Length: 298
Image (cartoon, rainbow, N blue to C red):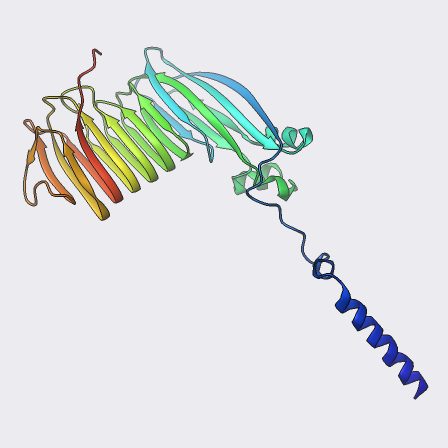
């Protein structure tokens, strides 16, 4: 009985001690405290990188952008792709910035008619498995971005995959395909096959000439605003639809009904001038604006 009493006393003492421990001490060995995803690291580092590749007229530029950052692409007269990138990293120590700087960057691959600019970094699980299997997990979610400014031959095709950030494209005569997660996209284009898909944000297309030369336009936005700026005397056929909520605003006097249902607040079947290339605008929830602008001196 005495031995049983001693074991009972020890068990009761152990239970009282365990219950008296603060909760975090009881689970500290099982789970580490996760970092606050909203906290901004104390250090920032910005580096510049410049690359030049030859690309003939009629070639293609493919760009896979970073999770965040701006993209500006301009057409010019040279047979070159000129890439300037500003890479911004954030971390709490210089050592962590050094580690991130090795991984968060971009690669350029080129052949005679195709230049590929591919962003790589901690956001890419497949890349990280190849390049840094034992990379510290607490550094994976730190914010970073790359701002691209790229000049390309005017008569090439573009294939752009963007993340979050503004996109500007001008002076391109070839086909353009753009997808973005969240963006304010500004386009000044006058021809080619244009296909734009944006999950959230604004797409502004300014057409500097009185007709769309070759191809057509297909712009789709899940939530946000589409604005089309047209010069006086513009000719094209228009299809548009607001699927969930919102409306179409008609600020271009030259737009007339092409077929039923015509020009309503949610659907558009219209024609400007003598018709021509098809311009298709689709909005999930938001606003479509058709506005008048003036012809530039280009």
